[in-house]
Length: 383
Image (cartoon, rainbow, N blue to C red; front, side):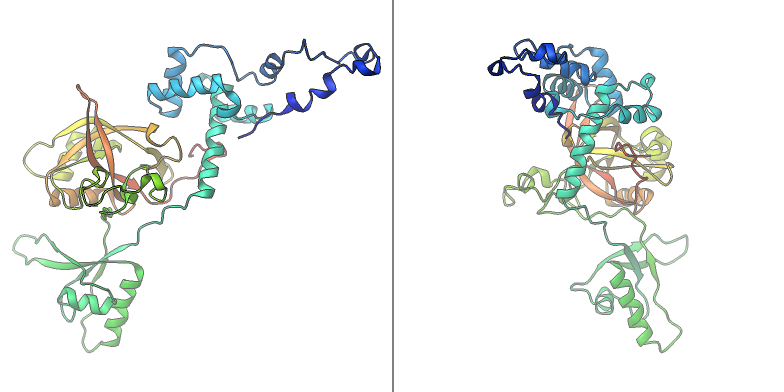
């Protein structure tokens, strides 16, 4: 945060020194008597973005909802804080920075110096948080190992990959008239290399292991940590589960709990019911409701072609994302949804608020983006 100390630092030079018996105001026309000097007015003239006494109007709130994706309540709170205490909640900046900002964020889109001051304060805080908090480690890639030949069971895959326990098995749906094929899921590049090296050392026939990349969104919900929660820094003391034995509500839904609500936000799933029905399959209509979640923010990736949700850099639960809640009935439907999203995402827990009619809050899941987002510009806006 940038704090302008000009008024305090310059106050001594503005005082008349009566002990010397000289009329400093006569010799120095710029001299000002402390008793008559209005520091607040001088500060307001230097930083015209700060309006100490302006009321917060409905238009102001609506504009900040659009600019910052706040709820109306949060927009009102932020505006009141900034106008009541600009040195704490704002950021001082030179006129040249404001002029540069206007090139890409014109006033007709709702931007003014007050909104820009809030942007700079947010960017300063986000930069601080990035320095003091550890970054989230991307999940390890997952591979599917076909169970056949010398790797005909999970225990054989365990030995070949050097795993501590037998890996999870799964089956691929057979085509008409075909036989079911079974796979093991192993995580990490080291496991894949271990299996290939094990096969190379035992090459006595034409058999070779079949190892495929699993492109489903990763789902590994922790039963002991809030690392799987959207928008929550699990390394902070206040975000540690309080009572594992009694069951902390924030550790729900469990890994294999069905049916379960999923919050979706990308255009194809959130706005096209036919696409959602096709992905989930089944003959029954998909149950979905207008909803929103908290603690995330939308980023672009793939040169702007796709949208993903990440943990909000700041403002925590005040960050709101609109979309739809979809009721997923079983593991098969969930896997179809995870494959649709791809391994650029992981499953995360979240609070979901239904907004179609009477509001209702439920615990559910969503897809958190774990890939590489398009870069940020200087002001923290992703471009």
